[in-house]
Length: 290
Image (cartoon, rainbow, N blue to C red; front, side, top):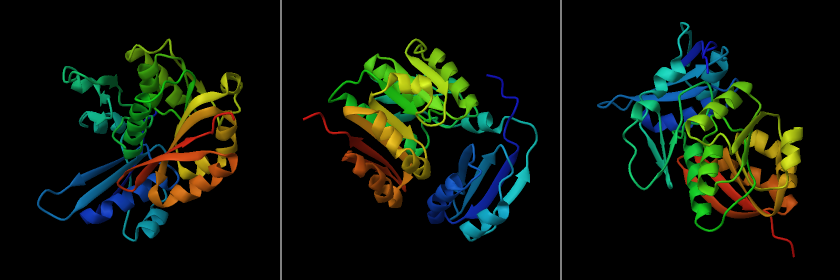
C-alpha cells in the first residue's frame, strides 16, 4: 500500500511515570483519534514523554485542559512517522500468537502461531493492550470450541481476523469504516497466506449487505471504543447466532458496566473479563436455543 497521506501532526506532553497510563488513555479516546500513541521513558528520572500522531490537527487547548498540563501541537514534515515509529517495536506474545514486523523476520520462535503485521496507517499491531487482550481471548476460546463464521468488526490492520483464520481455518469477514484499513487488512492477509479466508469490506456497522448476508455469526470481535460499542449493541446482538460469542474491547475498566448495560437487555451473558492496565476486554455469549 502506498503511504502517500501520512500523519502530519504530533502532540507532545511531559509527565510523571505514574500519570502516563491515564493520559495515554485520554489521548486515545479524544477526537480526532490519533493514529498512534508512543511513550518514551527517561531511565534515571521519574519522567515520561507521551507523543501522539494524527492525520488531522488535534485540539491542543482541549487536550491540555483534559490532561491538566500543557500538550504541545506541532506540524510534522511529510514523512511516514507511523512506519518509522513501529519499526522499532518488539514482537508481541499474546496467547498462542506471536505478532511481528518485517524487521523481526527470523526471530519467530517454535510452537507459536506467527502473524506478520506491517506498519501502516491502520490500528492494530498487537502492541496496544486491547489488541493483545483480544488475541489472548481468541487463543483461550480455541481451547474449548471452534468457530465457523467469524466477523472482525473494526478490523484495523486485520490482525484479529487473520488470527481467527489461523485458529479455525474458516472464512472470516473483516470490516472497517476506513477504506485504508481495509486495504491494509487485505495486504496483511496476503502476507500471512490467509487471503482466501479473510474477506474485508468497507462498512459502517453491520448493515452493509456483504456483512448482513453472512449473519448470523458464531463469533464477533469488536475492538473499538466504548461509545461505538454501546451504539452498535443492537446490531451486534442481532447478528450473533444462538450460542455465539462476542469479544468487546477498546474500553477502559470503568466503562465495563456501561457497555454491559447495553448488551444484557439482549440476553447476552458475561463469560469472562480480561484486563491489562486500564484497558478491558469483555467476552459475552448469547444463550443457546432451549
